[in-house]
Picture 1: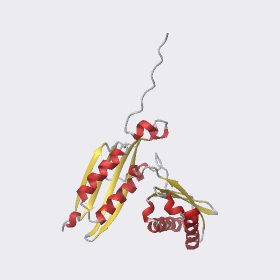
Picture 2: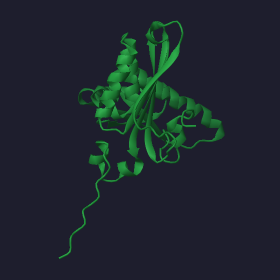
Picture 3: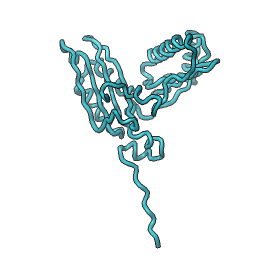
Picture 4: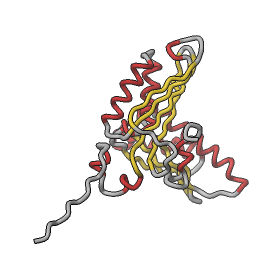
Length: 233
């Protein structure tokens, strides 16, 4: 089961929050769902180099709140916020709604599966060796302090006639354990021979460890230390 189910969808509503948060009638639901997808596609296409990992959308009766999780927020904000104001104006004109953009910075992109997958896809587009790209990326992700990582690429690898799948992993990837924060990312590499799909799984540890104050040890991949008992007398 762990090999067939998307880890994000497997955890949504249990340990992961929804990417779109709003309520609508049956009549409006389909149109709003398509509009969410168009908003995400438009922003991702316009700011390819901003390293946007996740776009969350919240709707109310009056406005739409969009939260961008980016490793390079300066590209979206621009000088004195001019680029951000321009993006808001373009979205309001395109979708005829009041938009409010909020940007959250990602401090360590090597711990975010979507950004890792996009990085591998970019290396493949530059005609780099897929084995070298996978090995280099595995080393970089493990150095960031995660518990495990797995990368899988599928397509006409190395320009071969037959498409095939190659994968490599380091550390632990317990895909069926809902208590573990398994970050999943997918990206497509558009090469001259065809599209190569890239999937990345990253084990970031237990959700309870991330929420508690044991962040320093958790980021290094170590178990949190138990407090020492005080000696009597």
